[in-house]
Length: 408
Length: 140
Image 1 (cartoon, rainbow over the protein chains, first blue to last red):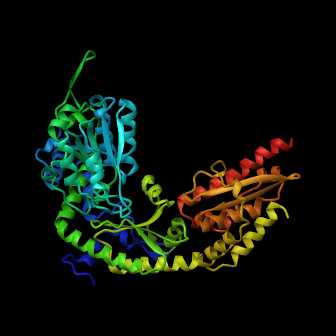
Image 2: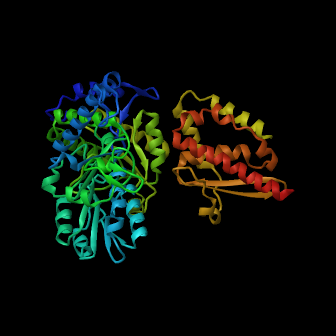
Image 3: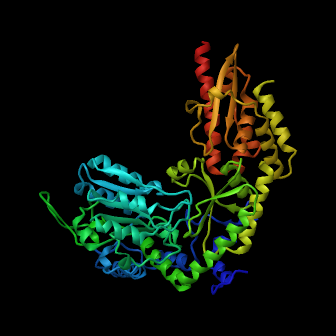
């Protein structure tokens, strides 16, 4: 048993999908870093929205529209409170982390010029690499990479020496989706600010495990996806400091984001609506708020304490398997174990595990530069959530052993 | 043997298995026994797109028949390509082009493999047929 204040058995009952079978076996869901499952409490909120107050928001005079607007804006305030954001209009609803990153990357086009430099960490998801490469192609700015060591930790001395007066932007994830490393983002942000550079932190992988205080971090931009933290897909949050959001041009034109439109000129709406063109994912935003309620009810301290013990147990059990190597051995890590077995392709292991009802991810995890760094085609990635159990870890370990004996 | 006859033979072999374990163990065995492709053909140009693992296929004419060799860095994938090569190699290009591929469903491969791998399987069949089309043109 793992010591915890959480009632894991009761929590598991909140997640209907955890009862299903896969290939005749009870589902063991260990692909939480790709997407987390949705509790009944959030599903109920989604159903309630469509049953009772589905309407377009902000413009309607009728009752349903007002109700939907109220609940949607209430969700924005929940997000504000959760991330300790100073002003609710600094919370921009997006379709997810990728949308948030692209909004900022596109907006910075007019601020950058040849000779400027942008720094990106060596352990980024493709969605936090490609938009910046595109930005550099548009502006002539140069993309430089903050290197990492073999444990999967950023080399902070190298980062410090890369920073200079030409550095305009720094991008880094809070937690690496492929390795599980928790990056020292406070240190990264403070150092960037000393040379006047802005910082965007991709919080997609962190948000389900860590409750960040964005004011204390003093970060310029922080972006997350609801579906990685018990919410639905297709909705997320971009936080931007008010001063930045005022400076950035709108990302998309359309309804909702305008103040006045004539054929000669359009003036834009105030924050946050300037960045929320078109009808948003209303139900998704509301469900995002409900997901935060659910997780906060459990408590992030209890969640991370339990998950840490689970991952420590899993790490020890997996390392006992002969020939198994874990990629990402940072001192500070969470939620993810990426591994390979000598002489076996990760894809083969994933296939056998699937037959046993165990869902893991195999491949490069949208982080090809990391795989190139380790000179491997990919890894098997087991990623954990608070609803996973020690028994499920045991099944994973047994499954890996079985796959190994079949494949070797 | 014709492609049809070989496919029936493969279906017969797979029908003797009771569960997925046996089926996969057999595929792994087939993968291990796949004749190794000549190293010079393991180049990016011979890679099949759409597979999570790397699959190289080389084709060359032996008189009027097309001979395939292949390799993969994943053993189960190697088993799958071994099955396909057994069905399609040493056959006339036109026969490969005309061949039905329903046997893949019948031996439970497409249904039981994960979607990405199923896509890889589709890509492999497509690639073998594309080679056949290319060599058929050459033969004419």
